[in-house]
Length: 442
Image 1 (cartoon, rainbow, N blue to C red):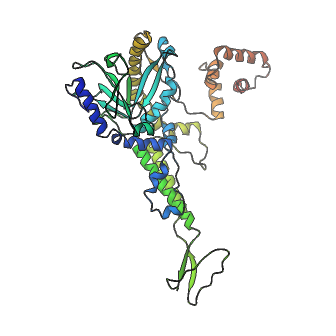
Image 2 (cartoon, rainbow, N blue to C red; image 1 turned 30 degrees about the horizontal axis):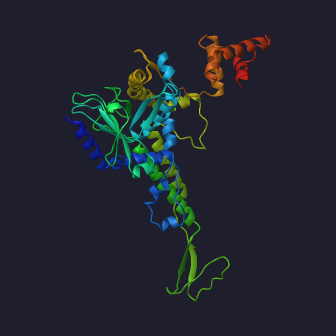
């Protein structure tokens, strides 16, 4: 929503109009995406594609691969990046674990906001992903100057007197505001004079899955969710087919008013000229199964993910690397286009929050090093690589131990190496160095 010159009274009226015009309606599609991500309400979503009589035979059949595919695609924060600012690292809190979920939600929803605030008890920054929010814009600006979101998203809170949090930053027309407004129009003050304590900074960092084209809210994983809906419809059809493979009783030559009861403990007596048999469908079950697998594979490949079926043959490390080239390219693109700029903006927000709420100066120096994702090698490939790397002084025993167990402290690593040197027989030169170290790390 674009806001032109506005007074405080006009702002309150505008917020009420936004709430009354259907805050929840704007977020209906995001609710559906979250349902598939969490695996809830799927049965209700499928039922509307079948007549009630059909589903009286079986319950809807469904699986949910949405979270699985997204978790295998959103891997930028699978390993925590290294952030170069010691003071920032002291107050950063659980940002790394939060960003794993945040990356998945950004991929799912297309646009996601991260709210950052200061915890006085722990003296650290705290974070909360915001799925449902309304941005407000100044004319000719692409980034919002104000954000409103519902303080609580539980069903009871949303159906009764819903509470909405509002933040805006300083503009030429009005100083930044921060207060709570209810769906009934009641204003609740949170800070003195309802003034944003961070001035021209909003404590929200917004990530977009795609670059800006037309709309602020980007497209999310609707293709993945719609594909999963089609797959679940196919699975339900397969379950119905399995049910009807038992056969449909068919009588011919009977008066339509005659009633016949059936059962294993009942003798079936038919009048002269009547016939009875079972009719079974002629559908090709194997072809339906292959079609379903093709749909799953197509959806996964569209998201740079490969599905490992149980009958798949083992692959070499090189084959895995070649098969994951598209995924690696997509992850590099995510880092440079989404998460490196996001991390820099997050540091800028943290600077202001720590300064105002925590009384801490973080300084201006900040850089970040994202971890490179490596495809696992087979045991034979790993032994050959490290034997070659040790001989050519590319790797050391210490670097090997760090990669095998990142939780080891430097003192533990050095102790393991010294123990190997002490206990390993000098005469047994044929034993692989990998085998020696492997005994120490299990």
